[in-house]
Image (tube, rainbow, N blue to C red; front, side, top):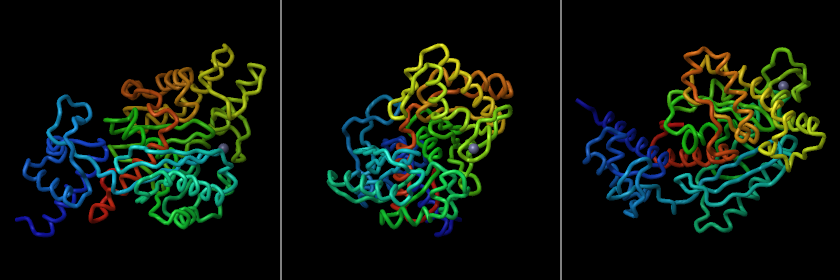
Amino acid sequence: MISDGEAIQSRLRNRQAALAFIRRTGGCSRSDLMRELGLSRSGVNHLVSALLEEGIIESSSDGQGSRGRRGRPSTYLQYNGSRGYVAGVDLGHGHVTVALADLNGNIHAEATERFDVDHDPVGTVKLARTLLDGLLEQAENPVVQHIVAGIPGPLDARTGKMRTPTVLAGWRDVQTFELFQDSFEVPVTLEHDAFLGVYGEFTRGAGRGCDNLLYVKVSGGVGAAMVLGGRGYRGTSGLAGEIGHTAIPGTSELCRCGNRGCVESVVSMDTLRRQLGFAAGKTYEADEFDVREITDVAGVRILSEAGWTLGRLLAESCNCLNPQRLILGGALGAYSQTFLEGVESAVTRFAQPAISEDVTVCVSELGTRSEIVGAVMLAAERAVQAASTGSERVNA
Ligand SMILES: [Zn+2]
């Protein structure tokens, strides 16, 4: 016999799972919910009626079919966008981007500005707040329910502080979480930027439908993140995937962390931009450089070798994780086919044959937007959790 407590828990789980599914798919039909939750039609009707009555979701019959299915559902369920917004903040080493999205994770407005993020944490957060306030001026209902910010460094998810004194050193003694919370005055979640990248690709990009993903962001730095078994994997303290300062055997380039031969010192965008400029006999400015424009023979060699070098390291990661997709993101990873082919060759050569056969190496479908899309999708997820009673984690 099922006790009252078990029945309440079961209803809560179904409610959270339904909200998470509606958010993840961007909207669905009642039949989709029946299949996803394994509930009867009357069970789904009961659940949906309650969510409609509370105004958390809304229904329409405007013909937007659920993703990947033909036909037109009789009613289409989605989040009630008028209940407010969520915001995402993407911090690079040299820029601040803020996006305002509805509760389905659809971005309505976005602003970005170049800034020395590495050395000025207070100024960075102040700028993010200013950019968000600017976006909210145009909004009809300027209520932000949750903010997710991506930090490009080793943030300890348990303490909200940076863990190493050498990377993002300007943030070392800063109570990063409190800094964001005090500035924005709404619930804030901080994540490693690469984690938001994998979450963006998992929900809206090249990782849709895959349960095991390895995402590697290659831009000003190098960082990795994972979805394992359909859930984001952060590790013990949120630092899983910090591969940028792994030493590459046989290299001696000085790295910004003070060591020599780190992955970042060999394959990051800044290093390659300098090498490509040297080979081409010109100076590529960071603001204007686009790796897609590199077609000269020497440049192609440099990009291919950099991909091969990273691929050797990632072959070992593939052996550990056996992923379905290895997604390359960031300004270098997402846009250079030559770099991708270098990574792919090394993974094929050095990973276990059965593992390399099962993994597809691809570029991020969202280009350099994986992190900001992941930020708003995760913020929507958090807002969903707040809309549910209870705090059980559903997906991320
Ligand atoms: Zn290093």
